[in-house]
Image (cartoon, rainbow over all chains, first blue to last red):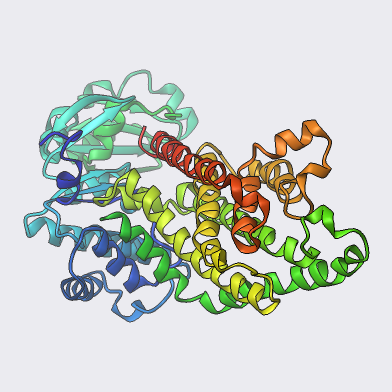
Length: 242
Length: 255
């Protein structure tokens, strides 16, 4: 289909959840869904059936008759998602769907998006949250200054751009000054941050034993698995992107 | 016919506020005609009334006020509410993500404005009739003509709103365009009382033609003879405004 000619047909098969909510503040929660259904020419009875079902799906049935404005950020986002689903789209576009939401609200949104995914709806999500990408995405693309710098499944990206584990060390400034590269051969890659030192190693515990064996005094140590966040920071750098 | 969805959306919102709005539709003409038509008019009657073409000041004022009220209502509706839908609440963004297009937005908003103007001018005509102002059976034509006049302003100002980043331009629009039109387009006194240069400018404005036409059909004044010019002006004004509204809204929302 050609977007310049078939705009209407294309739009009838996709749903859009914008970053900033653009709900109709002059209509109630239920009316927002019913009116949006009218825009898609969905007949009244069918619109009502879908609206009730969607309000239940996003857990807003009790707020059906309320105005939109007093709703919390999480509720508005869920209503926006419900509205984007009113035309039963094959493709759902979501722009930073959980930005600004509290943890409970985020998990509820993730849960609903996961259910949509299992029903066969294709989700296209942009996000700054690597945990979100890890939770929801089968395939992801890392972009830096409008360029694709890496793509693949979360697991592939971690394997390719990071190690299996990361050892995080905290040391005093005096110890840090006297290290003199003594950590460098313990890991594939060593990154010194102002507050800690990161050792990217296949086996973090083993690297930690080596640190102890070399009698380097440390304040604290933490071994964790590599995450997409490590990949993202490796690929796009730690300086602020303005 | 998807444009009707936009009209319908406004109707749904209006369902909650119609009482106050209908009350205002009757109150506005009552206040103006009471204070200016009856009150101020009583002084004017004492003087020579041939300057008004042989009608009383109340009769002269009423039809002009109908046209001017349609302009003012349309102007208000085309500024803040439309700006809200473009950038504050971004209703149009949501509508365009659904299968609606920019022409649907323009025609749908115009459709709703036509409904509002129809009810407002109906209320106005009822009040004018109570004051005994229509003296010609042609007066019934004032109804659609008032809608046409208001619709032209609505659409033109919607085009203007599409070019504005925020609402600061609206104060200037009211101060330098709408208020001068309200005062100098023949609503309160005949424009031939103005110096020639200003009279010429006044005769070029859309409100002047709306006032002349509506007054013409209500009182069968000599102005009625020029009805094709007045009507043609209003139709062309509306057509140009529609073209601009579509173009500028498209540029603002899509490009």
